[in-house]
Image (tube, rainbow, N blue to C red; front, side, top):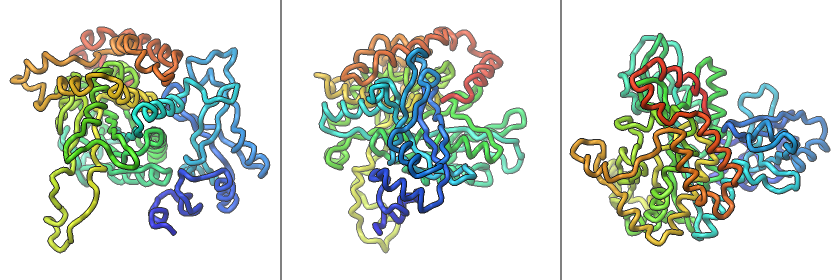
Length: 500
């Protein structure tokens, strides 16, 4: 067997003998027959950003063939705010490449993510996964290249404080046990996510940790590998579902909320992006950031105020986007700089064989490290609709290639200093700011909506629905109104604790 298939943690890949991307209905049926699978779950993202589930008992081969081929009918008006109850029926059709064994089911169960279709058997224009599919197609049509993405999924684990080996407040970054309390939980999450098809890069403890009212709050992160954007969104959705279910099973609480309490680090959902052509990463040229990468960054700079409408979707999001919290406040980009909106992470461009230096017995390596270079969008958080967010970023990067002055825009918005240091106040004053509320974000999306509606990527109904939801919070002055009021802040955090 192919060594990559043997190493794949998804047991279905090894059993079927081919990559998940090549799974067919015949493969799924055969696996179900040979492995005693008794139930099938359809899972699909709804308007609240969470996965929903429909359970099927396999009562005959004919019925199994029917549901795999025809899918099932669901009530769209209960899933999405833009669908009227008078014409609400939708179809959900499974995508075989997403099949995985449910790690939480007592009865052997195979689960698959689904796509939505309308009454005419066409992909639902405003569904989350179809919006991302349209964004990726438009990107390729315009540029001739592919858009890849991956996420840094941050979350807090909350449990009773055991008061042994206490971690240092707000200094948990990459901490080991016994000061880190939930490393075993995180690694089990990673194993389950990988078995469900997630392409994981690594996991670690993050900066945030503190105790409050007898509870320990510990911030963790699982970071993924860059892959085609649609698969990246699918695996982030499944990862959140797995982490929450495993936490419930273990008697822990979990939150992906952007703000956890006053004065402590909130959780982001940083998205890394790269552009690929014929299997080659185009983000570097001659060991430096390429004009292709700068062009894409220019597009993000142009519509960054609107991206918050997809990536920062409740009022607590804007209490995270403040200075000195390792979260961006201004529209700019830079190298290895955590005060900017778009960061170019450290790349393997030194042309030095560090492995051979650290390990003198090793022979020189020929690994193509250019594949690793990405650029990172730092504003989004766990409240995001993942499909809308990655679709919005895909549109933004495509926009760069439709601008006449993309490299000029990139040059004007580049910074190589910490913009929040006092000596850089003049530079900070020259930079546009991100929205400071859901209401301001809605206004930005309204003014730039044509960019996202171009090529029929975001539907009019979807943009209208996003704007309506953001404005419903009526939070245009909220950040100023409750500044310094810890009780009101904590009430707001509680209200949005399980967002996304």
